[in-house]
Image (cartoon, rainbow, N blue to C red; front, side):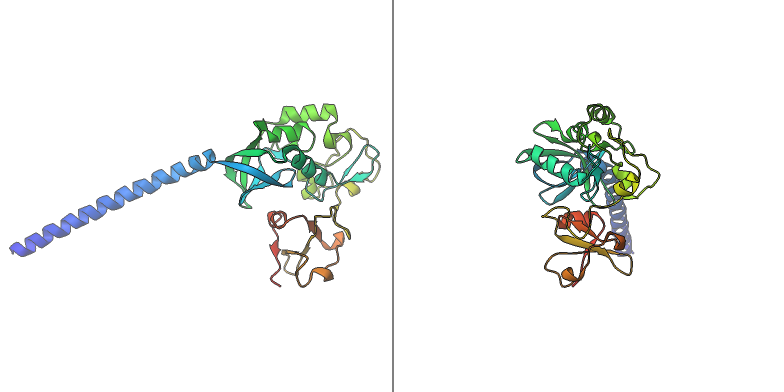
Length: 263
């Protein structure tokens, strides 16, 4: 009987210990769950950036989307002051690269977007780079997410800076090919400008010599990208009507939701 009582006592001890340990662990996990967003929010990423687009860079292995703004896609077209087509998306990318060339970036993490990119507010040499892009006319304030740069957009519009000197469509409307969107900019757009501005720079010839990756849509509706060394690269004909487009990097293709061909 004594042995049974001792065994019962030991079982009760271990049961209470297990419950206590489990309860403590559960509380710790709950605390970490609440703490994790704060840690992610506070994380800073520092280094030299590789510019992929007017609002996208890579620092180390981290893909970063510049938050609070929206810049034209690489293959977006605008009109210049003579109402001629020009690749404003490439211009925005190149102006950012030139402005920040060789400088150290510090990006303050805000969130992670649905494409797995880090959304951040970035400084280059102590300068708010999003503010510079919007005020220089190479990006718009993305007011669906933030109102931080509305005053800078107003200043760019009044100064006819960057894209504002000509005519263009807001990047978010261009991506969904919104035919009812207004045409922005200081230049009076000619008749038929909507069709031109909603088109893509992607065609038989790449919009830039360094944009050599081809993207197309397969029979399942997936976007597939092909590098020059891939098997089917030369057989893909670049026609806008067939949904093909050029990419300047693997990162850009993946950011657009495309995957690399398996062959």
